[in-house]
Image (tube, helix red, strand yellow):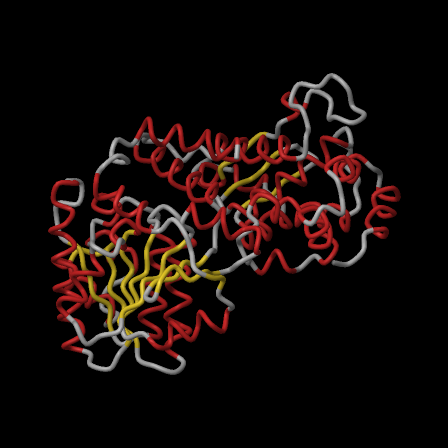
Length: 435
């Protein structure tokens, strides 16, 4: 919570749109949920809908990847069409050329003026478009200019609804999956207009990671909740991950340099340390890491290395593999965290690896089993609502997390896990019962 509050304060200072009536209507619309949904119940709701209105948090790659996974899931049994806000309707011909494989990814990005006109990360959006090209019947751009004028935002809703209606006329019987900004998903915004234009269609609003719902549902370990007769909310990221992703976007927009991941990663380390009761300025190395603030790792942006002659060679092969799989990697020998992409569960896991080494006096030798368990625990602790496959790989780490949230293991005992040598920590792990 400390880390989340810090990020939100910074965003409020740098983003003046948060108090707009349109955005307040969204936040006020989804404050409570009716019930927790199982995976099967969520899939039933999705299967019953003709139109899926999916709320997108543009700065969060998990939002676009969730939409891509939905396309692949639906295409197994039904035809599906993708409609996206990230592409302007005026550029439909360019998108169609790429669909027909007449132009490359690089040309598509350039001709869409994606970085200038949209500004969010290209990679997850391109993954979504590629998934649609492989599994869907068509892709349509929904948006129109001006994007920056909040006074015209309702006109963009009307334009999008008209384009969705056009897509339905071209593809009768197909599921229309719409990925549009989350604030547009308030019942009186885009959903109302779609219902007015397509009154016989069954539409389902799929929200992602709504803050107020997340904190209510996290205690129930919910992957999705029901928020009304025609709306659900799924959880694939924590609020901290959302706002760190947005802060990184703000920083990139306001800088000509490579993204500085350091503030975001340090914020995660501070949050993990405070949650476990570690002090950043303790002079003792008994129950506290000695001067933890002075032991913080160097944060290395892999993108900067790629543009520095000779620098990529400093990354060892094992580190490269972990960067490819997780987007970040802690290297204890040099006390560095290499970051290619900010992914909250993985950053939290690597932060836990650093904290383990800091507690052990930065020793280079450690049990990979203990380290993996604590990394898993750290990821689950700071990103409890996520269901990433990586979080299911370490049974001991999951056991620690479940015992911790259910009160069977105290913070003091958790700290002992970070401080103990491999034998001591192994004995504690062996003593934990499987929940």
